[in-house]
Amino acid sequence: MARKKHIDGPAPVAEAREVAPVERGGEKAWQAALRPRTFDEYIGQRDLIDNLRISVRAAREHGWPLDHFLFAGPPGLGKTTLAHVIAEELGVNLHVTSGPAIDHKGMLASLLTSLGERDALFIDEIHRLAPVVEENLYPAMEDFKFDLFIGDGPHAKAVTMQLPRFTLLGATTRMGLLSAPLLDRFGFHWQLRYYEQADMTAIVKRSAAITGIHIDEAGAHEIARRSRGTPRIANRLLRRVRDFAAVERDGRIDVDIAASALDRLAVDHAGLDALDRAYLSVICERFDGGPVGVEAVAASLSEERG
Ligand code: ADE
Image 1 (cartoon, helix red, strand yellow):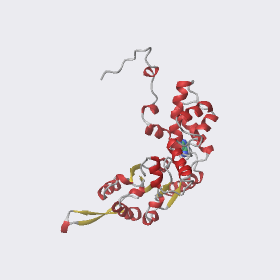
Image 2 (tube, helix red, strand yellow):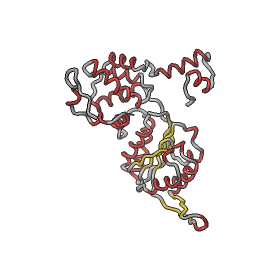
Image 3 (tube, protein in one colour):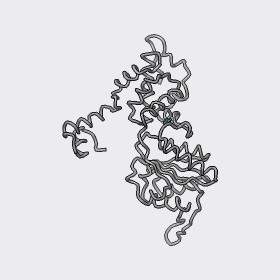
Image 4 (cartoon, helix red, strand yellow):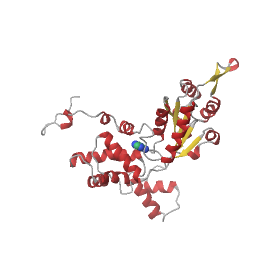
Protein backbone atom coordinates (compact mmCIF):
# COMPACT_ATOMS: atom_id res chain seq x y z
CA MET A 1 0.00 0.00 0.00
CA ALA A 2 1.26 3.47 -0.82
CA ARG A 3 2.30 5.57 2.16
CA LYS A 4 -0.18 8.24 3.21
CA LYS A 5 1.00 11.57 1.92
CA HIS A 6 1.53 14.37 4.37
CA ILE A 7 -0.58 17.20 2.98
CA ASP A 8 -0.93 19.71 5.83
CA GLY A 9 2.50 21.28 5.76
CA PRO A 10 6.02 19.89 5.77
CA ALA A 11 6.78 16.22 6.26
CA PRO A 12 7.70 15.23 9.84
CA VAL A 13 11.33 16.09 10.54
CA ALA A 14 12.11 12.54 11.78
CA GLU A 15 11.82 11.15 8.23
CA ALA A 16 14.97 12.97 7.24
CA ARG A 17 16.89 12.08 10.38
CA GLU A 18 19.02 9.07 11.08
CA VAL A 19 17.48 6.92 13.79
CA ALA A 20 19.85 5.83 16.56
CA PRO A 21 20.23 2.01 16.79
CA VAL A 22 18.60 1.93 20.24
CA GLU A 23 15.45 3.53 18.75
CA ARG A 24 15.08 0.97 15.98
CA GLY A 25 13.74 -1.86 18.13
CA GLY A 26 10.79 -2.06 20.47
CA GLU A 27 10.68 -2.17 24.25
CA LYS A 28 12.78 -5.36 24.48
CA ALA A 29 15.62 -3.91 22.41
CA TRP A 30 15.50 -0.69 24.46
CA GLN A 31 15.80 -2.63 27.73
CA ALA A 32 18.57 -4.85 26.32
CA ALA A 33 20.62 -1.83 25.23
CA LEU A 34 20.48 -0.47 28.78
CA ARG A 35 21.60 -3.64 30.52
CA PRO A 36 24.85 -3.41 32.46
CA ARG A 37 27.39 -5.85 31.03
CA THR A 38 29.93 -6.09 33.84
CA PHE A 39 29.97 -5.99 37.65
CA ASP A 40 31.47 -2.49 37.50
CA GLU A 41 28.55 -1.22 35.43
CA TYR A 42 25.96 -2.86 37.69
CA ILE A 43 24.22 -0.42 40.05
CA GLY A 44 22.56 -1.64 43.27
CA GLN A 45 22.19 -5.14 44.83
CA ARG A 46 25.60 -4.44 46.40
CA ASP A 47 25.76 -7.51 48.71
CA LEU A 48 24.88 -9.84 45.87
CA ILE A 49 27.34 -8.29 43.43
CA ASP A 50 30.14 -8.45 46.03
CA ASN A 51 29.44 -12.17 46.59
CA LEU A 52 29.31 -12.87 42.87
CA ARG A 53 32.59 -11.05 42.28
CA ILE A 54 34.29 -13.39 44.77
CA SER A 55 32.84 -16.57 43.26
CA VAL A 56 33.61 -15.55 39.70
CA ARG A 57 37.15 -14.49 40.64
CA ALA A 58 37.75 -17.79 42.46
CA ALA A 59 36.49 -19.72 39.44
CA ARG A 60 38.65 -17.74 37.03
CA GLU A 61 41.84 -17.71 39.06
CA HIS A 62 41.74 -21.37 40.05
CA GLY A 63 40.25 -22.77 36.89
CA TRP A 64 37.22 -24.10 38.78
CA PRO A 65 33.86 -24.29 37.06
CA LEU A 66 31.35 -21.92 38.65
CA ASP A 67 28.73 -23.65 40.81
CA HIS A 68 25.02 -23.54 39.86
CA PHE A 69 23.38 -20.29 41.02
CA LEU A 70 19.72 -19.41 41.51
CA PHE A 71 18.23 -15.91 41.56
CA ALA A 72 14.75 -15.22 42.90
CA GLY A 73 12.68 -12.08 42.96
CA PRO A 74 9.93 -10.10 41.27
CA PRO A 75 10.11 -9.37 37.51
CA GLY A 76 12.28 -6.51 36.29
CA LEU A 77 14.95 -6.60 39.02
CA GLY A 78 17.74 -7.94 36.80
CA LYS A 79 17.83 -11.75 37.06
CA THR A 80 18.43 -12.17 33.31
CA THR A 81 20.89 -9.28 33.34
CA LEU A 82 22.87 -10.98 36.10
CA ALA A 83 23.15 -14.16 34.03
CA HIS A 84 24.60 -12.14 31.13
CA VAL A 85 26.99 -10.31 33.46
CA ILE A 86 28.23 -13.54 35.07
CA ALA A 87 28.85 -15.17 31.69
CA GLU A 88 30.67 -12.06 30.48
CA GLU A 89 32.83 -11.90 33.62
CA LEU A 90 33.59 -15.64 33.38
CA GLY A 91 34.40 -15.30 29.69
CA VAL A 92 32.00 -18.11 28.70
CA ASN A 93 29.02 -18.42 26.36
CA LEU A 94 25.53 -17.98 27.78
CA HIS A 95 22.68 -20.12 26.45
CA VAL A 96 19.27 -18.68 27.32
CA THR A 97 16.00 -20.57 27.69
CA SER A 98 13.02 -20.81 30.06
CA GLY A 99 11.22 -23.49 32.05
CA PRO A 100 8.08 -23.65 29.86
CA ALA A 101 10.19 -23.69 26.65
CA ILE A 102 11.81 -27.03 27.61
CA ASP A 103 8.68 -29.08 27.11
CA HIS A 104 10.15 -32.58 26.85
CA LYS A 105 13.18 -34.59 27.85
CA GLY A 106 14.60 -34.67 24.31
CA MET A 107 14.69 -30.90 24.24
CA LEU A 108 16.64 -30.80 27.50
CA ALA A 109 19.04 -33.40 26.04
CA SER A 110 19.66 -31.31 22.95
CA LEU A 111 20.18 -28.15 25.03
CA LEU A 112 22.66 -29.81 27.38
CA THR A 113 24.62 -31.58 24.68
CA SER A 114 25.04 -28.35 22.72
CA LEU A 115 26.85 -26.66 25.64
CA GLY A 116 30.58 -26.09 25.50
CA GLU A 117 32.94 -26.76 28.42
CA ARG A 118 32.21 -24.26 31.26
CA ASP A 119 29.36 -22.60 29.33
CA ALA A 120 26.48 -21.15 31.34
CA LEU A 121 22.88 -22.19 30.77
CA PHE A 122 20.26 -19.70 31.93
CA ILE A 123 16.79 -21.09 32.65
CA ASP A 124 14.27 -18.35 33.37
CA GLU A 125 11.03 -19.24 35.21
CA ILE A 126 12.70 -22.43 36.35
CA HIS A 127 9.77 -23.18 38.68
CA ARG A 128 7.76 -23.96 35.51
CA LEU A 129 9.86 -26.93 34.36
CA ALA A 130 7.83 -30.07 33.60
CA PRO A 131 8.42 -32.71 36.32
CA VAL A 132 10.03 -35.17 33.87
CA VAL A 133 12.41 -32.48 32.62
CA GLU A 134 13.26 -31.45 36.18
CA GLU A 135 14.07 -35.05 37.19
CA ASN A 136 16.45 -35.38 34.27
CA LEU A 137 18.13 -32.13 35.18
CA TYR A 138 19.25 -33.50 38.59
CA PRO A 139 21.96 -35.91 37.32
CA ALA A 140 23.01 -33.29 34.77
CA MET A 141 23.55 -30.70 37.53
CA GLU A 142 25.17 -33.10 39.94
CA ASP A 143 27.28 -35.52 37.91
CA PHE A 144 27.19 -33.87 34.47
CA LYS A 145 25.51 -36.97 33.11
CA PHE A 146 22.37 -37.50 31.08
CA ASP A 147 20.53 -40.84 30.67
CA LEU A 148 19.02 -41.43 27.26
CA PHE A 149 17.06 -44.39 25.91
CA ILE A 150 17.81 -45.25 22.34
CA GLY A 151 15.22 -47.27 20.44
CA ASP A 152 11.80 -48.53 21.56
CA GLY A 153 10.26 -51.43 23.46
CA PRO A 154 12.38 -54.49 24.39
CA HIS A 155 15.28 -53.34 22.22
CA ALA A 156 15.59 -49.97 23.94
CA LYS A 157 19.13 -49.34 25.20
CA ALA A 158 20.05 -47.02 28.05
CA VAL A 159 22.99 -44.77 27.23
CA THR A 160 24.60 -42.40 29.70
CA MET A 161 26.04 -39.33 28.07
CA GLN A 162 28.83 -37.33 29.66
CA LEU A 163 28.08 -33.61 29.57
CA PRO A 164 30.53 -30.71 29.69
CA ARG A 165 31.07 -29.03 33.09
CA PHE A 166 28.47 -26.33 32.68
CA THR A 167 27.03 -23.77 35.10
CA LEU A 168 23.27 -23.60 35.49
CA LEU A 169 21.92 -20.13 36.25
CA GLY A 170 18.27 -20.36 37.30
CA ALA A 171 15.79 -17.55 37.82
CA THR A 172 12.39 -17.63 39.44
CA THR A 173 9.73 -15.20 40.50
CA ARG A 174 8.27 -17.91 42.76
CA MET A 175 10.95 -19.38 45.01
CA GLY A 176 8.20 -21.09 47.04
CA LEU A 177 7.20 -23.22 44.04
CA LEU A 178 10.66 -24.73 43.61
CA SER A 179 10.93 -28.34 44.71
CA ALA A 180 13.39 -29.11 47.52
CA PRO A 181 15.50 -31.50 45.35
CA LEU A 182 16.00 -28.80 42.72
CA LEU A 183 16.76 -26.10 45.28
CA ASP A 184 19.31 -28.39 46.96
CA ARG A 185 21.27 -28.72 43.74
CA PHE A 186 22.07 -25.02 43.58
CA GLY A 187 25.25 -24.04 45.39
CA PHE A 188 23.97 -20.52 45.94
CA HIS A 189 20.61 -18.85 45.96
CA TRP A 190 19.72 -15.24 46.47
CA GLN A 191 16.55 -13.23 46.76
CA LEU A 192 16.85 -9.94 44.87
CA ARG A 193 15.44 -6.90 46.61
CA TYR A 194 13.74 -3.84 45.20
CA TYR A 195 16.33 -1.14 44.44
CA GLU A 196 16.90 1.80 46.75
CA GLN A 197 15.97 5.30 45.61
CA ALA A 198 19.59 6.46 45.17
CA ASP A 199 20.40 3.41 43.04
CA MET A 200 17.25 3.91 40.96
CA THR A 201 18.21 7.55 40.30
CA ALA A 202 21.71 6.45 39.27
CA ILE A 203 20.20 3.84 36.91
CA VAL A 204 17.94 6.45 35.26
CA LYS A 205 20.92 8.80 34.77
CA ARG A 206 23.03 5.99 33.31
CA SER A 207 20.24 4.96 30.91
CA ALA A 208 19.75 8.58 29.85
CA ALA A 209 23.48 8.95 29.17
CA ILE A 210 23.54 5.78 27.04
CA THR A 211 20.54 6.87 24.97
CA GLY A 212 21.59 10.50 24.63
CA ILE A 213 18.74 11.92 26.72
CA HIS A 214 19.43 15.13 28.68
CA ILE A 215 18.08 14.80 32.20
CA ASP A 216 18.84 16.69 35.40
CA GLU A 217 19.15 15.24 38.88
CA ALA A 218 15.60 16.15 39.96
CA GLY A 219 14.12 14.77 36.74
CA ALA A 220 15.96 11.47 37.22
CA HIS A 221 14.86 11.39 40.86
CA GLU A 222 11.22 11.89 39.86
CA ILE A 223 11.23 9.01 37.37
CA ALA A 224 13.10 6.81 39.86
CA ARG A 225 10.61 7.61 42.64
CA ARG A 226 7.69 6.46 40.53
CA SER A 227 9.31 3.24 39.32
CA ARG A 228 8.63 1.00 42.32
CA GLY A 229 12.26 0.10 42.89
CA THR A 230 12.33 -1.73 39.55
CA PRO A 231 14.92 -0.80 36.87
CA ARG A 232 12.82 -2.22 34.02
CA ILE A 233 9.96 0.14 34.94
CA ALA A 234 12.36 3.10 35.26
CA ASN A 235 13.82 2.47 31.80
CA ARG A 236 10.36 2.17 30.27
CA LEU A 237 9.14 5.38 31.92
CA LEU A 238 12.32 7.22 30.90
CA ARG A 239 11.47 6.59 27.24
CA ARG A 240 7.87 7.72 27.70
CA VAL A 241 8.90 10.91 29.52
CA ARG A 242 11.52 11.54 26.83
CA ASP A 243 8.67 11.64 24.27
CA PHE A 244 6.81 14.34 26.25
CA ALA A 245 10.01 16.35 26.70
CA ALA A 246 10.75 16.13 22.97
CA VAL A 247 7.26 17.24 21.90
CA GLU A 248 6.44 19.85 24.53
CA ARG A 249 9.92 21.13 25.45
CA ASP A 250 13.41 21.18 23.99
CA GLY A 251 13.94 17.49 24.77
CA ARG A 252 15.53 18.04 28.17
CA ILE A 253 13.95 16.28 31.12
CA ASP A 254 13.59 18.19 34.37
CA VAL A 255 11.33 17.53 37.34
CA ASP A 256 8.41 19.54 35.90
CA ILE A 257 8.14 17.68 32.60
CA ALA A 258 8.83 14.34 34.34
CA ALA A 259 6.04 14.90 36.88
CA SER A 260 3.61 16.27 34.32
CA ALA A 261 4.26 13.42 31.84
CA LEU A 262 3.96 10.71 34.50
CA ASP A 263 0.74 12.24 35.84
CA ARG A 264 -0.72 12.11 32.33
CA LEU A 265 0.51 8.54 31.92
CA ALA A 266 -1.50 7.79 35.09
CA VAL A 267 1.59 6.75 37.05
CA ASP A 268 1.17 8.34 40.46
CA HIS A 269 3.81 9.51 42.98
CA ALA A 270 4.13 5.95 44.34
CA GLY A 271 4.37 4.44 40.86
CA LEU A 272 0.89 2.95 41.00
CA ASP A 273 -1.25 2.84 37.87
CA ALA A 274 -5.04 2.99 37.60
CA LEU A 275 -5.55 -0.75 38.13
CA ASP A 276 -3.21 -0.81 41.14
CA ARG A 277 -5.20 2.01 42.72
CA ALA A 278 -8.52 0.35 41.95
CA TYR A 279 -7.22 -2.86 43.56
CA LEU A 280 -6.20 -1.06 46.73
CA SER A 281 -9.44 0.97 46.85
CA VAL A 282 -11.53 -2.20 46.64
CA ILE A 283 -9.63 -3.76 49.55
CA CYS A 284 -9.72 -0.55 51.64
CA GLU A 285 -13.22 0.65 50.94
CA ARG A 286 -15.42 -2.23 49.87
CA PHE A 287 -13.80 -4.84 52.13
CA ASP A 288 -12.91 -2.57 54.99
CA GLY A 289 -9.16 -3.18 54.69
CA GLY A 290 -9.48 -6.99 54.36
CA PRO A 291 -8.72 -9.79 54.75
CA VAL A 292 -10.44 -10.61 51.47
CA GLY A 293 -10.05 -13.49 49.03
CA VAL A 294 -8.61 -13.04 45.55
CA GLU A 295 -11.88 -14.18 43.91
CA ALA A 296 -13.84 -11.43 45.65
CA VAL A 297 -11.28 -8.77 44.65
CA ALA A 298 -11.27 -10.02 41.05
CA ALA A 299 -15.09 -9.97 40.87
CA SER A 300 -15.23 -6.43 42.30
CA LEU A 301 -12.73 -5.24 39.69
CA SER A 302 -14.42 -7.19 36.86
CA GLU A 303 -10.99 -8.74 36.21
CA GLU A 304 -9.75 -12.30 35.81
CA ARG A 305 -8.37 -13.94 38.96
CA GLY A 306 -4.86 -14.02 37.37
N1 ADE B 1 19.85 -1.02 33.92
C1 ADE B 1 18.95 -1.87 34.37
N2 ADE B 1 19.35 -2.37 35.55
C2 ADE B 1 20.52 -1.80 35.85
C3 ADE B 1 21.42 -1.91 36.93
N3 ADE B 1 21.19 -2.69 37.97
N4 ADE B 1 22.54 -1.18 36.88
C4 ADE B 1 22.79 -0.37 35.84
N5 ADE B 1 21.97 -0.24 34.81
C5 ADE B 1 20.85 -0.94 34.81
